[in-house]
Length: 254
Image 1: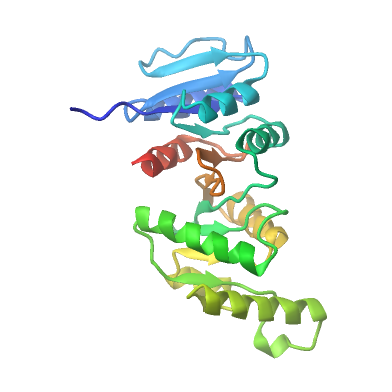
Image 2: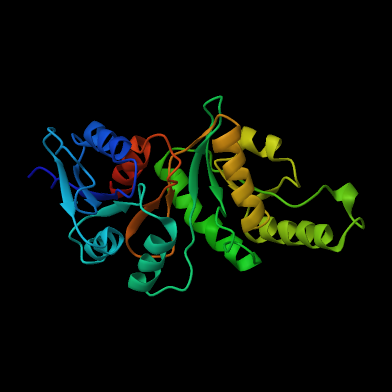
């Protein structure tokens, strides 16, 4: 029997056009349901396989349908982060979310990167959990198996500041326990051989993500949430396109 067509939901808050265009590009690979406020989408998509679901609270409808298996995966799209992720945490029964982003440099080098949220990845155990879950995703995308762990300085910086010393010590421990390599602060070296890179903390990780995607000409293809039992791909409302985020969800469902 042929495999059932997967159903993926994506949210529309503003800039409906780029979400609809992305959904139309991917519609052959799956069925896309777009969640939005009434009147947001002025013209219904002509492409078969793209539906519009109008609802008073689209972020809640998207999350509810994901948790009830009405859809197989969800992509945030242009829905507001605060309300959507709050609804997801409540529905999934977790007090925080762990995300691993698929990034691409301006030169076309793809890699996984975490933590990317300011409240994520602050402890050694947090980072080890991200490594374990990130390795599974890296294997799916045929990325290098090597994992690089970053810290806030180089060994020669020991003694310059207590926070730098702690960062170096934590990274060394994470690398040893997680069968990874500590690259100190040298992200430019880690990118050459690693399929997964772990930032020192959520703040620096968020800064690296934003610098690469908004200033450095790179791309953010979406960040799957890895500590819930449903597939939710987080995205930035500033992304110019959601085709790759939708394809990321399709790939992770296979």
